[in-house]
Each structure stands twice: as C-alpha cells, then as structure tokens.
Length: 211
Image (cartoon, rainbow, N blue to C red; front, side):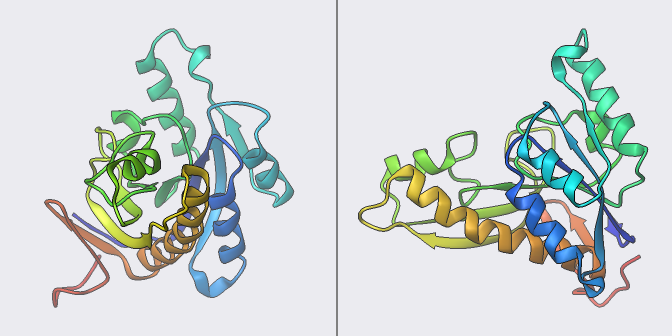
C-alpha cells in the first residue's frame, strides 16, 4: 500500500484532548501540511470537544449506547467520519476499538504509552512498572482490528526513574507522545508513507515514488 494525500485529519477523542490540542497548535502553521477538519467523540461533555469548538472545528458524537449493536455503531461512526473526507484519522485518546467499516475505509493512526509489542492494552504504564523495566516509552502505530497490534510507525523511549509511580511516569510519557504524534502526522501527510507487511516507511525511502 502506498499513500500520499492532502492532510485532512479527523481526530477522535474520549477525554481531555491534549493530543488534539497539540495537533491544532501544529496545524496553525501552514507549513505543517495537515489540518483538523472534524473532531469526533464517543461521549458528550468532554474537554476535547470544548477544545475543538473553541478552535472552530466541527464536532460529532456517536455514543455506543445509542445503537442496538456494536456493528451498527461501527457503521455509523465510519459514515460520520466519511462525511469529512479525511486522508488520515487520528485516534487521540479515543477509548473505543474501531471496527472494520472505519479501518477498511481510512488509515487510522493510534498511540500507546509503552514500547509495543510489550505491554499492550489499557494499562501499559502500570504493567511496565510492575514488570520492573528500566526503559519504557510510547508507540505510534497504524490501527488494525486487534488491541495495539497494528504496524508500528514510530517509537521513542522514556526512562523509568527510581521514584516513579504510574501517574508520574504516564505524564512524562504523554509529553513525549504528544511531540512524537505531531511529528509523525506532519511527516506522513507531507511525505506520504508505504506499508509492506508490518513495515511502515515514511517518504520515499526505497527509491520509488510515493503516490
């Protein structure tokens, strides 16, 4: 698969929207190459939606409980995303696993607060600490149907300090995660990317032309 499109972003959030804000700040510079065209959520009343509204970005909410089945919700959120014709969907603290209708229609970028494939799932920071690792970090990946199993786009390490607890370590990881996500989104939309099996390459790194 070879991808290079204009940088229209739909960002999905479930909470405070700190990664969303980082993307909004970056996209204020025209040279960044990407712009957030819509923000979606799975619940009302969250700070991420407030941040989007303050920035003048259209928002939508698709609650799982409003649909009789998970398959109906999967179809509904994919249809809503499609209304904004994104070149990239960014799952920025979105606490739902996206289904086939979205994953088959759009590339979806996700982050995780550990160095995958180690410590996947909802408690990556806690699990890494409990395991006694001395270095952890964050991962940016292309989402697939599994839980934190998609092809890895980028990773960055974060040291585990002797006095770290889960909250302190997670905050330090999130600082790195925001910067890495902004960097990778910008590069992907400006330079294009290719996926071969599990190998993701950004830009023209193989001598061919990205299209």
